[in-house]
Length: 136
Image 1 (tube, one colour):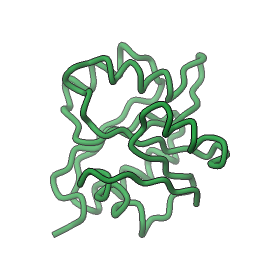
Image 2 (tube, one colour):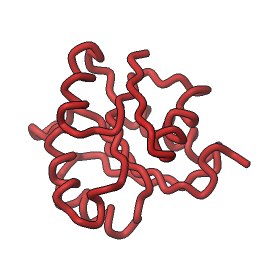
Image 3 (cartoon, one colour):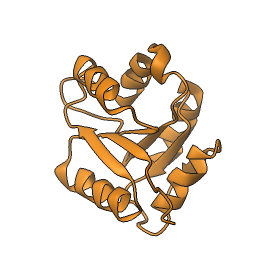
């Protein structure tokens, strides 16, 4: 059985190439994919309510002064999503961002560019209740 069989993965990412890679890896491993590109909290919450994700992936930097850290707080304020694992997926300096992501309550950090062989296993580990702090 594929690593992400039937798992609903929601990704907030403004870069089309990154979304395409995550979509391909999710679907190739049996998962279901949806996304939001702009990082506007009200749109993200609407899509999350409609999609019912089992894991949420957040880029850390967006246009319009949105950040993954701010989005995490908005998501965690919603009772329905409070216990859904949320993983930062970022090209930002992992040495700086991993401690910050831990302190803010992320369930993990995965550095870009993604390791296409490792990525499904990383998500699987988080879905089993673990954490992943991968600096690349």
